[in-house]
Length: 193
Image 1 (cartoon, helix red, strand yellow):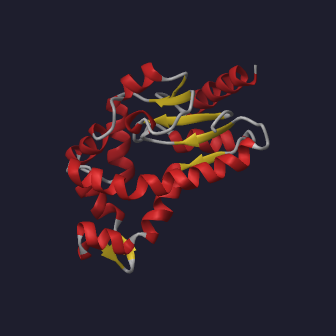
Image 2 (cartoon, rainbow, N blue to C red):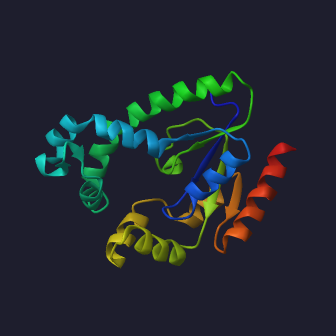
Image 3 (spheres, rainbow, N blue to C red):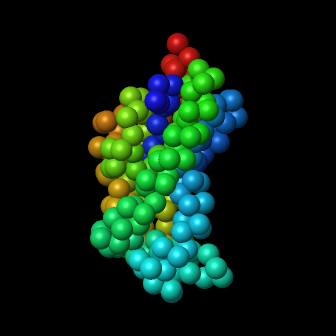
C-alpha cells in the first residue's frame, strides 16, 4: 500500500515540522499524522469526557495541554488515548496515501510514533535528529514547560539515538537553519537518484 512513502519521524522538538515545511517547498506531498490526530481528537469530545472526564473539555474543545499533562505522565492514560485515536488516524492516512500512490510519486507520512507503534508497513524512514539535551531545551522553550514536564514528554517516546539507528535516512538538526537546509538538500539529492 505505501510503496512510494517515506516515513518522516524523530523525537519531540527535533524539527520534524520545519523539515516537513522545507519538503513541501520542494514540492513533496506530506501526510501529517499529528494534524489528523488533532482533527480526530476534536471530533472525539464525548469519548474524551467518558474516558478522562469533563475537566478535559474547555469551550467545547479538548484541552490538549491538560490532557497532555496526564498522558505523558501516565502510561495507561496514554494507551487509552492511543486505542481511541490510532485506528481512526490510520484510516485517514490510508485514504490520503491511496490518492498519492496513484500519482506514482515519492511522498512523506509524518508519524512521530512510527517506531514505537510499529503499525505501518513502510519500508523507508527518515529520522530528524537532534541530541536529547537540545530536545529538552527546545521543548521547554517552545511549550513553556518545566524540565520535568519536558523530560516526561521526551521519555514517553523511544530514545532519539535508537530511532537514528533504525532509520533508512537521517537529517541532522543540531545546528542552525542553514545547516538544516543543506542536510535536506543532500537528502533530496539521494532520494532523487
